[in-house]
Amino acid sequence: MEKIEFSNLQLNPAELIGKQWMLITAGTQESFNTMTASWGGLGFLWNRPVAFVFVRPNRHTAKFIDEQAAFTLSFMPEKYRNDLLFCGRNSGRDVDKMAATSLEPFTTPNGLVAMADADLVLECRKMAVATMQEADFVNFAEVSPQWYDPTNPLHKVYICEITTTYVR
Ligand SMILES: Cc1cc2nc3c(=O)[nH]c(=O)nc-3n(C[C@H](O)[C@H](O)[C@H](O)COP(=O)(O)O)c2cc1C
Image (cartoon, rainbow, N blue to C red; front, side):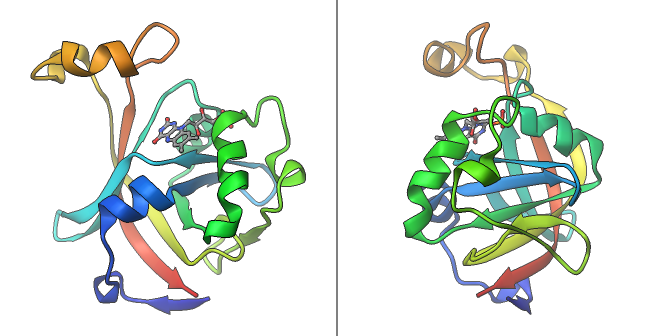
């Protein structure tokens, strides 16, 4: 993959994240997990490019994100759609996602795990973490019936500096 400046990318973040989806991969080469995510954003904060992702604390991946200083976002070609669905419907607690899909991990020069064959990989260094609270919402009832209940806890928001951008 080729390393470029994030600012040289031309993309629509809502399309990219909301429609193409992404794999959040966190952990070490020896022990990592990946999950599909379609909620989040890309932007500019604290004078640097940032990514923010919304991960429920009950995801197995959340444990790996919390343990490490950084993680990756991998945006895959369409042919991996079923694998992304698999990684979004199954937990790394129960299955080995790398064995069950055609996804293959690779380790970036900075030692982070990402997915081979991605169109785009972002290395993300955690800068701030917050757990959303019911009181943070202007109108919690607008979203809670569909998105939050005792088995679907409020998201943790991870705001990260995009430290490296790789494209194919
Ligand atoms: C299309 C799609 C998008 C998803 N987006 C998110 C998301 O943004 N945040 C989140 O916490 N879970 C999201 N999920 C659910 C997780 O991917 C799912 O719970 C997964 O099984 C977690 O795996 P893990 O337990 O191995 O971490 C999404 C699932 C799908 C299918």
